[in-house]
Length: 86
Image 1 (spheres, rainbow, N blue to C red):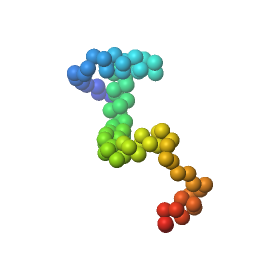
Image 2: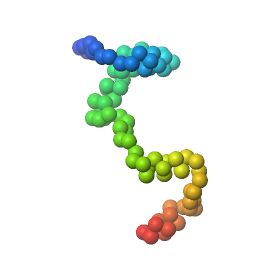
Image 3: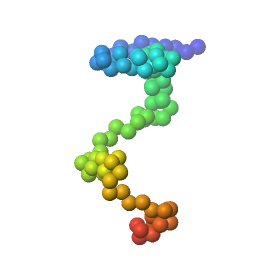
Image 4: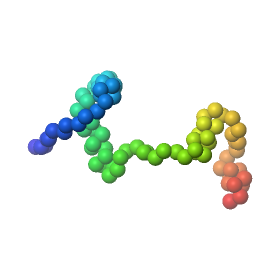
């Protein structure tokens, strides 16, 4: 038999409402959605998404890649490594 416990937390009302709506569309309650998240944290042994913030240089590269400007294409990995000098 599974023993359950209560969790009490405070969160922005707009976030709660949005999360409830999304979970509902998936056929879940807010409680079940949060429980799934906690199960994932425990099974992975970490927060299951990246929390890092890219530095300014990375943000510029990401923006350039998304725009498609200044990209260099290669035909295959052999050509890529040749150009990289490896």
